[in-house]
Image (cartoon, rainbow, N blue to C red):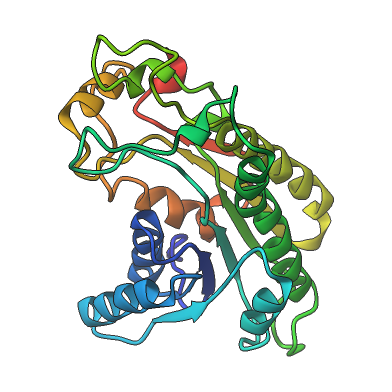
Length: 281
């Protein structure tokens, strides 16, 4: 019987591959037989992840590439190195978040809507939305026009969105203490939600646009992943989640394999939400 989850012979480009979830996406691809290309503008960080994974799996199925997703020349340089990409995981994002292990440090005061600069807004959209557009455009053209005629036309695009692309952030969870007023506290910035909502919209657009070209496009909306966050923040966000906790770092790997493999061949244009139930409350 065919293993529907088998990714043997498949090559996946993962943007933001040196990050927390980028590494886990790569693990999921490699564990089911595929090759993972980790594209990241922090190439040293990506190389560390690649060394860890190649040692862990005792193979060379993970490769690091410098990739600036806001620079079309950088994208083309990576694309031109490989004959074919079967899978693209758009994982890179600008995501201001609680600093792990320190409840006093958080993200920039520029996050507040009332005082956010246009430059900061543009920067957020450029990485999350424009970067997604540019990388996807290059890779889809490669999927549509394989270099070798023996390669089958088509592929899989997986956009990493967010539960905050489905619901608005509850800004109360970012208060450092009960005495801090809303005007004093920091917040999740609007560009993050706006971009992630747009990524889901882009997913649906491209899914219909390329439905007849053997290209499937889906998105995954994860909830918050525990990464040694301050205890007060963990308690605040856990109270919003029916399962009562943040996600463990490994809990999205199954979804990655499902969405990138033949196990989901009749699925396109879907946003898969995995958030411990937060968005249903």
